[in-house]
Length: 203
Image (cartoon, rainbow, N blue to C red; front, top):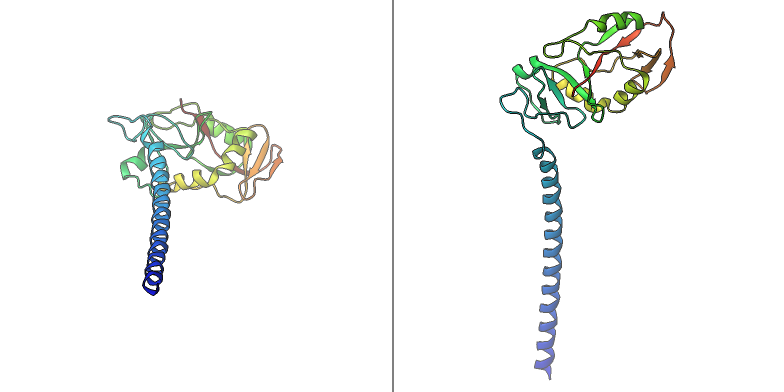
């Protein structure tokens, strides 16, 4: 009887160890699978984009906030780890802030100007590949830009350009100003002095 009891005790211990090993293995496999799937999804989001051939940028069209548009119409996707060549930095013309509208903000940021001065300046503003079509944004457009300013400023920095972080209000074509410090909007008159930017649609 004693031998049988000892055998049963050993068998029970083996079963407990086996169950614990199986549980740990399943947990590790589950965790590893999730990580792999997340990585795959992230890679697929970029790899599914239409590629540009013989262009400055890697992609053929605008598809994401923070996309950097080049003078030949090609695009580079913004990421925190992105590094642009000197050629790409020189050819960059805008950063996308509105994917649905395909709108991007240019790099020619003004300060200490009235709304009328900003309108006059941008009416003749142009860059290589996009010589016209730039304008002072309306309030709803500028608020859309403010809401994604983190990604936009990150992309601007990658291009070696000035970020949109001035303390004064950025002027809107419909006589408002939006403060990028906190998103506050105020009505302005003809003698308001503030900052300005130009935006454009990139089809």
